[in-house]
Length: 469
Image 1 (tube, rainbow, N blue to C red):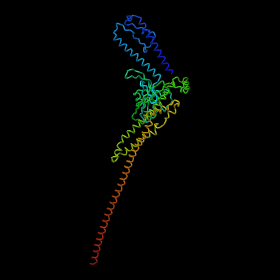
Image 2 (image 1 turned 180 degrees about the vertical axis):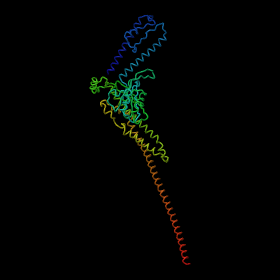
Image 3 (image 1 turned 90 degrees about the horizontal axis):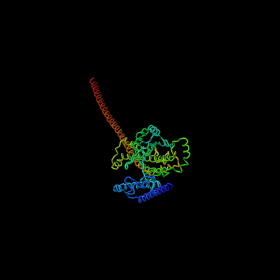
Image 4 (image 1 turned 30 degrees about the horizontal axis):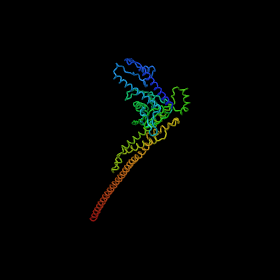
């Protein structure tokens, strides 16, 4: 209400001063001769305006009220049109700024709520380049590069590592105007994600791919997600409107009592301690960053599962055609291990399925950071995506089961053929033994027959000798 009243008072004062100046100038000009205004001289309106020292963006302009006869009217009409356009632009700018200061950046209510399309948004980017980060090693590497860890004294290390990047100048592509973008914030999470706020893309990628790469455990291809945000000085709390995060930077009256003792201690001990509303804004960024890092981590698992399906998509087609699956044991074991790794990262080794990460237990409860985390999770459909991912992994488990059955069947078939081979060898050896025994029996029978014939012949000879004797 105070902002609205101040705006209307200023607006009325400007109108009254403009009308008074114009009336006085026209009255004086009516009583002077037409040839009084010579080229190079200023009108009474211009002199009155300068005597009042009014800014050029007010309704009063410095143009002459009457046209001199020596000056071409065509040039004056052009100059008058340009100045009129500047005055209307100034009026429009004043009206837009006044309306924005009264209503804030969020327009409408309920389902029709939206962000002011004129408002300038900035980017928040999440990177996921590793399965986990050694957060202590990442802090050491960032300090070596000149970054100051935890500049706003949030004391949330090692749940999150916070550093800031210096201010940079950005050029508007449409108008060519150069503007300062302010300080950027970088948050490194142990889960393997890095979230940057108002940080240039090449700086963010340099931090992820070069500076803290040595602190990454099981690095992989970088996954990137972008979101938009803006800061609203008329709000004391943050909110998500559509696909834009609206950060409330107005100090809340509810937080004064909470931060009273902290501010008193900071004033006597550490003069560099930041105001509490800046710390609250950083904590809100951390809450949203945690939810965005969760979504980016989930996107990595979704891509890994999509790659898994891409490499096993021919299995259902092959089975439906009645053809045998010709996969090696190494391929089947590798695919089974990939699926188990994805499921473990989703349900065991990360905070994706937790209702609330551990860092929120160390943050002030009255700031409502849990609601920020949950609201962005709902906006990004994290819960639905986790459910769908688990259902897809159930289907992938069926494919892995088919591969394991194929591996087991192949192993069983190998054992069966091995047994058949052993039996066959045993049969061959048996047949050979029988053949050998048969041959030995035949030889023994022949030897016995020959021996009998020999003995018979010897007995016959002995008989003949006795008979002769």
